[in-house]
Length: 638
Image (cartoon, rainbow, N blue to C red; front, side, top):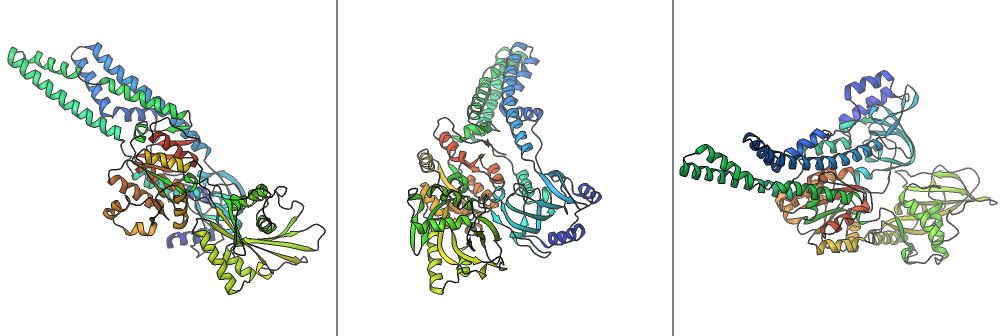
């Protein structure tokens, strides 16, 4: 929700920009005042920085100290041998790290958006980093929103906010007023325009955007050391203490027995140096580099090589639902007509009844001709697969009028001209409550429909209602409720579970890894997906219940619950911290920016194209080779 200060700033900017946008002089002044529209980022990992990170490792410091002592003692041969080990290991580590950083830099450059703005009354395409507060953004299909803002005007606007929310369903937006602060009037940096267009007034850029706030959170988090790094530090301390004690003992015995304290000191130092395990550094570095190389062949980027070893030590795997356990592709699962449910996923192509075909055709007619919304794509795909020959519905019909989704009537209505017919066909689809009102169903029939909707929702299914009407003439009513709609039925859609997920979850359990599902979706949907995936689903914790617990109670509860629904991004971070406090080695997968703080806080963070997450971890936890079917970035972390 927009704060009063932000709302006031937006109003001021709107008054100043009007419909002409900012002038070049105003834009330049604001760019100087607020800075570039760039997200806060940590210092770039240059070659010198990577070398510094390597040299700060205790094992390298110990070897460098030993090499320096050999030089002081006049033994350049041993000194060069030790330093050679150090430089060889450093070269391997730096080469692998720089390779990954170059790929990540290329990906960042590719993802940098450009913006279409109005300045001085003219439309201009400018770099996204040059957008300033008060700019008027022109929104078009396929564009990525470069900054946070409030909608001035829009038409049929659908926004994909999965980068922030993790949920794949596009969100419908409406234009706001000077005093509006509703979420459906707001735009967020990083979201994608999937349908429609409009104008938006920029209210926040750079670090002040929602993405920027996540970036600030990331900078406050200290990456967790992997178990291997912790063990190496303990090993170095033990060797250092043992070597110092042995050197002191030799010094005392040599000096006391022979009276030559200087040679006793040299003998003690020599003996201490001889027991240093300098091979450990090379072996560990080479093996981690080989591991990074092997998984790189499967399109996996490893930013911190010690995390490769930690993958096999994980005890808890936290996964997202949408796109990780599910296919991130909506599909028609069932159609309900007159209290009868027809399972589409069990039907054979060409075997649908005429009534079911009628519902599917109406759903396609009420959708965009070239769909962007995942649910509309599902309607088109289902019709093409299940009713051969009707992949495009009625290609000879022409769309002559439409009524977009509104806050008052959350349903989309399209009117079509049928060749050779004086009557137009009107189709609508939308929220069941809205379509019930459009069809003017009686109270008993409406109650029956809503009961069917609840039954489908309990199975994790999203439900839309479909209706149809006819209209004569070319004069169109102002609102769709003027048509005499006929109720056709309900369409249930679901994001299907990936077929490989149950086996992957089973393998994780066999490897001693507990799997926890974290999602922002509804509890009923999360529970249904967890059951299908083979996860314990009897107990579901919601974000509200999660927030009410103190840290001590939360540490106990997270050990007993495997499904977390309606979870906010900051709660994901708290969940990871609670698991770590219990002594678990936590692996976290995520595919959105909202997951970044939790990814960085976990011992192992896997930021991936969703298909890769479970498969990658399944292979590693079983001690076998890695497998990653998609391009992703495995790091420990961020």
